[in-house]
Image (cartoon, rainbow, N blue to C red; front, side, top):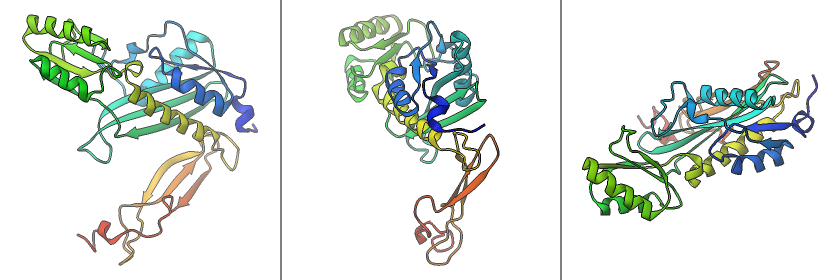
Length: 285
């Protein structure tokens, strides 16, 4: 099969598997970059695969869930091209002391038996939660969480879903629900609502991951021209500029094709041929 990026996707219908308005940022990028026509499925319950607020526990990893969303959207719409995203919040992969938003986006092309993946990890997130007892604590948290542009959730305690109120974007509602829960339970847990439609900051990271997905699709295998010729492995060992010993810094990226198996190594992807001695275990033990 001979491919070009334009004729592979141009004019095809692509379903975005979301119920949280992610198509608002994803569709323009996908339509411009791939020439597809984006739609969203009606009544697709993506919350059934897991919720941030805990009503439904995510039992699989983010990639598996994104695949499941794609397949569910394909079944619901009889469309053979789907995109889904799945986010995770917690310690940054390389800076464990900091919180990060890790967004994974998957494109599933059933017609051509392709799966293409992209990822964006960012320190930029308001992800947080706190047990509070006073209105002032609530207002301080709301300010830090950039409320009301970003929604909040109130519940009796961190893991309770009883009397939980989600998607709060009004100060009047926030105060009313706080006082109700405070009277009934004595303490209240407030947290950021991480659903995309209530979190513009997360939408921004999803947008970044979608742009990366388009770039990955547009990267064609040099041998068979199949889209998705992307990084599949990283080699470390960039030599120290003083002693020449291998460091843990990136030496090369390995690109490979899922269709034909062709692989290519790109040396010095960060445009550095040596590493600072400060990162060498011998020069700076």
